Structure formats: structure tokens, C-alpha cells
Image (tube, rainbow over all chains, first blue to last red; front, top):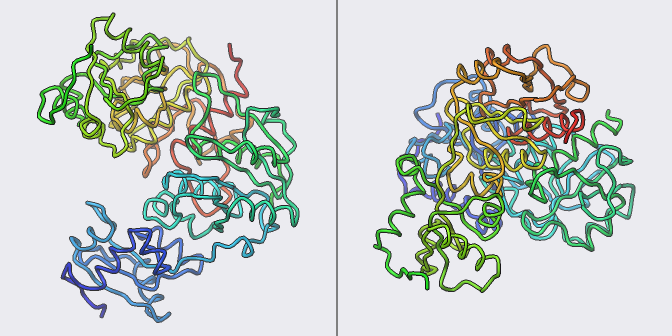
Length: 267
Length: 267
């Protein structure tokens, strides 16, 4: 029988709610993911939450039973919770009926195996957690290895980013690094660095993409610093037929990634 | 000299704030746009706000002077406002130093000239205003004619959608219609209806796109109704190499739109 939590002031509730803030996530090295689909994606990738929280009002579901069983078998905690309290935890009026607390992953560059995939996405100073999660989701879709976050990016373990990733936070590798460390790591092995750019750039449809191909987009307002563009092996231009001079960052990454996918041999 | 507003309870402030809510926008047939860039985009498209509000703390800018002059010359109202009040109006902690009230555009299908552009975007039951604004921005980038919103979509005149559109709300045509009315209108003239689909679909890279090409994406959770897919002239499939079975709706629209752009003759 799972333990049932009915009070807002319960310490577990306070702990779970605290994970909606970056400073607490950082200190605890834990993050929240919500929804049966996300948690099932995690489980099918061999990743189980340390704590599983289920709404007392949930409908029975075989996948939820399997999840609860696995979490308990792995020594995790399974809790029942009033729906109103779960809503406080997830910050949504209509909360999913299940949420989990996960240990944050290793996000060092050293943990990446660049030969694992033909495409990697790279984001510099990306501020919007929704864009970040969408890039993870796109990375999963194109069979990318993961997302490398340069400089001061939004937190990939925020509730918003995890939600927008639609489970890709569990399938894509995530690395966080300063530019200097990234470029040193990149040049220590194979890898083509590509940026969308307007300067001396080639048509993105015919550019010579090569695996492992690192596709880089910049900050939502400022784009990439010039020095970062200069360090690229390939600068490609995406046509802009209207008045605007740029695409949404996650859209630009997706257009590039799908183009590269059509050029690169995939396993 | 512009009139200066310093009180939170001023009727103009109340009116401006009310435009953050859909029911008030609908009743007033007005919407808010903020930021010098957006307002300049509007002006360069011949669209001026009825009311222009500027923060008293703004830095001088020739484009802002030109804007204020044009608004006054057109019989509009130009107001100065305390920054703290402007923050209440726009709902942002760091408000742009300028905002405008615009009259909503005609969003009837009858107002669309389908021959004007080779690409049109269509969204069905799109719930996220950020996705909607991003689709407008992508439409501008590919030289699309506009965005057609089917069934119960987010409001294209919400502050979030206008913001995400990065000015494209002023360059793209926007139409709102029920499916039945849209399909009747579409079949009353030239037009190829295309959807991303997993059923009996062709590779999106080699499909025979034809102008005017209407690229349709569905609701973020449910996708397109089967009957809508059946009514399409072309169903195309975008490869999904990972675990997920779909892309973010705005990303899917962009990947399709850029592919179609490479196939279609453009002016």
C-alpha cells in the first residue's frame, strides 16, 4: 500500500514543490517530471524516479501499475496524494495524475560519446525553457545524440523544459559547458561545427554536412557571437523571404537538423 | 506634448490592461503589441496603432519619434506612462518602453487572396499561443501568404502570440474558420491541401508540392482528425528516428514549409 499524503504542509510536498525552483533543483540534484507518458518513456529507457507520486483520483492503468511496481522494487518511494496537492506540486490547474522525482544526469562533455550519432544539437545562451525542451524533442526525432548547452542557458531540468521535451529529456544526452571548454573538447576529436549565419554562408540545402555534425543555434535575441560563427567549419544560410531576419531558435535548429538528416548516412 | 498618465486607476490604463484578456479583446476588437521593433514593423506595413503608449523613462530614438508623429498625424492618441504602470499593462517585469493598441484585422476567409503566395500555413485546434506566433514568424520567413486557423485555436491577437510572431502578425494574413467552411472555400478555387501524416503518406522530401500549397498541422496533443487527413490532396511523412511519434506543431509546420519552399517556384 502506498503512503497517502493529504496535507499541504507535509515535508515531502514541500520538497517536491521546491524542485520547481532552479536553486533547489541544483542543490538537491533532482528534478520533476509529470505525466504517465513521460514517466513511461523514462522507464523504457531504464530510468526510474526515486519517488513516484500518484493522484488518489487516478484511473487504473496497467502502465502505471508496472511503473509503481518497478519503482518499489528498485527501492524507491511510491506515494498517493490528493489531487489538489499534486496540482500545487506541478503548478498546473489540471495536473497529470502522476509525477516523479528523478536524479539529475551527468551533464559533462566528458560523458558524451560523439560517435554515437551523426547529429548533435548545440544551443548557446538559449533563454527559453520551452525552446530548449523543443530542441530536445527535435533531437530525438532526427536521431541526434543529444543537446549541448553553451554558456548561460535555461535549465534543461526545469518543469517547462522537461514538459516541452515530451520525454526526450530521457532519451537525449544533455551536456552543459562554457564555449572555451566545448570548442577544446570538439577539436580534440572528429566533428563538424555548423551554424546558421548570414555571413559568407552556403545554401543550407547543398552544404557539405559531415558526421558527427554539430548544429549550433544562438540566443533568441542576439544570435551567436561573431567569434563563435568564425570558429565554425561550415556556415549555412536558411532563406528568409519575408521581413524578419531570423527564425525562432528551436525552429532554426529543426530546419537545419532535418536538412542534415537527409544528407548524412544514418544507422 | 503627449498626455502623461501616472495613476493605476486611470480609465485608459484599465482599458489597456483589459486587452490582455480574450473576452475584452473580442468585445473591443482591439489588441496590444509592445516593443519598438514590433511597432516599427507594423508602421512599415502601413499599420498604425490607434493609441501609442510610451514609458516616461524611455531613451530617445528616431524611430520612436517617427512613430509618435505618424500616430498623431493619423488622429491617434499618444500617451506617456510611468514605467511601473506600463509593466502592469504588458504584464512583464521588464516592459518594452512602448506599446500600441491596434484594431483587429478582418479574419474572414473571403478576405484572403490565395494567389498572392505559393505557401499558406493552416493550423487546426492549435492551443498554444507561442506555437501560433511562431507559425506566423515562420510563415513570414518562407514568404507564405498567411495562417489559417481552423476550429478552436488560441487567439492570434493575444499578447503571447503577438510577441512570439516577432512582427509577423502585421505581415501575414490571418483567417479564422470552421473546417467545413475552410474546405468549401478551398475547393472553390486552386489549392493543394497537405498534411503531415503517418498513413499512406509519401516522403516529405520528394512529394509533389504544388502552389498554392496549404500546409496543415493539427492540435498539439491529438494531431489532425482522420477526416481532415482524408480530405488532403497530399499526405507526407517526416521521418521520426527516435522514440517520439511527433514533432512540436510549430516545428512540423516549419520543416514542411521549408521543404515546400525548395520545391515551389517563388516570385
